[in-house]
Length: 338
Ligand code: PEP
Ligand code: MN
Image (cartoon, rainbow, N blue to C red; front, side, top):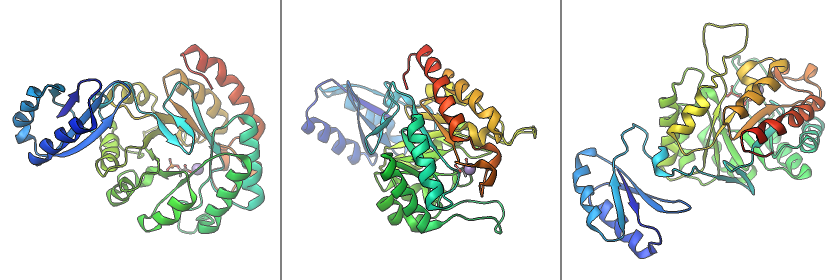
């Protein structure tokens, strides 16, 4: 259930609602929107009729059920959509946000070259994996702690906040110290202990869709983070497994408008992993923005031919710059900017 408060309520009135909700054995999440504040009540639905009585309070507008299985992620909770602040860079506003950088941090020179190049091309955030989830235990696993520090330094040098993947909840302190946004990869999309742990920090989380995760399951994964108290979640469509093997994954662009209807959380698209083929990245990036995505995640490597992971899908810097140029008119056509 959600309790929609009337405009201009006082902090005391919000606290009153929270107390009454908690007395009914629900957890209360206060969500402050632009126009109104909503108290989302999560708990055993058998008490819902009692929550309905809150409508008699003068400062309560209405009490309404959230019928879907995801509650805090539901669009009704914040109809105007969420804007997530990543160390000064907003995701979910009018402007399209572009996260770019190499698949993996490979050396100081490589990550610095990538950072400077994507900044020059117009990226807003720098990405790079330090801890890599590889299919084979014999493949390059990332530079780990050192990679994280190199990414941080490169971001600093280029003036870009950084996004990087966390695999193990035990590493959380290290990531909170060095990264601006923590990515949960497709392989960990339903690692519930990791999700819960990320719910207990305030740093923004970039949650990727699992390769066989249905959209409802994807939003329930986000719900794990939200329900622990971290409201800063951005969703990323990165392709799913289908019978098609001509591309690495099948980029599910249906997900973009559907997720935007179902949830207030920002939705970005990763056409690099979604296709696995560099020559498909630009067309699918344009299509993603046309479909209503709030941003993109693009893998860019100074020299993809020698990349230690995902070489075939990474763009050369000049191709990234070209992508950004092509993106501007598409963004404008759908009422967005770059
Ligand atoms: C990545 O972003 O480098 C990555 C491993 O992506 P995914 O989890 O989507 O495969
Ligand atoms: Mn990759």
